[in-house]
Image (tube, rainbow, N blue to C red; front, side):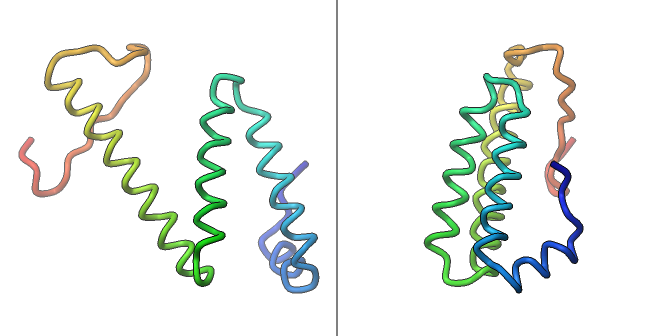
Length: 109
């Protein structure tokens, strides 16, 4: 199924929020199902966390900010692991991955 345009989604949300939510869940499920089986469990866990944030948020903006903070935290954890492995000379689990080491502006090269 192709993703409808933004305007179509906005109209659906305005006219029928329940149908919008069903479509959103269906599209997410299709995306997860299209990933390799070994990735699906992790994606379902991530989606579970996102849904929990949605349920506990005061409004859509609060939800967006909380999800962004959670993503930032995970990205920083990942950066730390990659940076530590790089510094210690250890190989990443899959050395064929192309990892770009990024540095903060205030971090020496």
